[in-house]
Image (cartoon, rainbow, N blue to C red; front, side, top):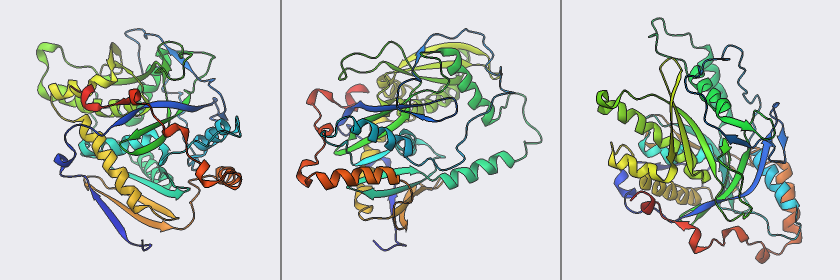
Amino acid sequence: MEPLETRRFSIHPLNRFQGASASIKRPREVAHFSYNDSHEYRDDESSINYYVPPPMGADLKEGSDTFKHYEDKEDPHLDSLLKALMHKEGGDASAPKIRADFVTWRGMMTKIMTAPYDNFAEFSMFATLHGGTIYIEEDFPSRAASRAAESSRPPPRHQHPDQQSQAMMAYWGYKFETLSLIPTPPSTTPPDQILHTSFGPHTLLLGGEVDGLLSPKPSNPNDPIPWVELKTAEELPPRGRQQHRDILKFERKLLKFWAQSFLLGVPKICVGFRSKAGILSGLQMFNTHELPGMVRRGTGCWDGNVCINFAAEFLGWLKEVVTEDGVYSVVLRKKGGIVEVRKVSEGTGGIVSKEFLAWRRKDEERTRPEEGASILTEAKTEDEVNQSRDTA
């Protein structure tokens, strides 16, 4: 591919992604890591927390005036995820390396999966090919620039009393988590897990933050882990006063809730309903796999099968585009409806750390090519699930 050639993948029409979903495999945890209060990497699960119902009537604004939100000052790339893989693989030098077609953070896959139904969807990512795997990360310079522009933007001159800033609503979510989790051992930073999964024929290693556990992890590593995702949403009007737009607003919000939990195999989502002023007024526990069917029977504003099929088709197309060394930009502009990919530079752009490159190079030197197959791709039939059954 020529350096400046741009390849395009159109999101619409969506009807080409309808029907039963591509075969997927239940996500399996293959590694984990934590961050301490200073956001320093730790090779352990010291940040695991357990869910407890928070007190009703709690003011989610409490503490917002002194809260300092952590923001990366330098591009974190995929460093923590790759470091966890090296730690996992280093435990047994003779074991096959953990491999997949794609390695990325959950956040990147969430943006891809929800793009068909998010009218304001936009993303900017970088991708690079190394050793047969495509590594995808966020375009950190673009995100930092957007964040700086947002913080320097003056507040609106005439703001409705019920209208809250994005920063305040983000704090409400953080506060809801702190009220709902018992640290074991004490910590304020949730653990991250790395999972092996697949969309159709494409295998993925995903890293993502998990909120908490409903009960201890099972001793059998093949059993599902009882993770729970914690989310907040504006309370709905009393049933007799609900209008279509109220339900539509909430069910649109459920799209991201579902995608984030689905990708990491989180079976439960606890939604804390709050008033416009940020007072916690209710709780509801949802089964992740039931949300697509619930929405289809409701407003029908999104289709889980379409999201899965779109993601599978897009990943297959990306494999055909990113076929040589170099850094590729992957961009979807707001209301654009087309994902554009082009090669922007040589090398890996720091997406794959030098330490990980050296680690894999050492393995390649001692292992014959035919011995490099990953045991993680040998999924059992019983672990294969079909989204169309979940949404029936």
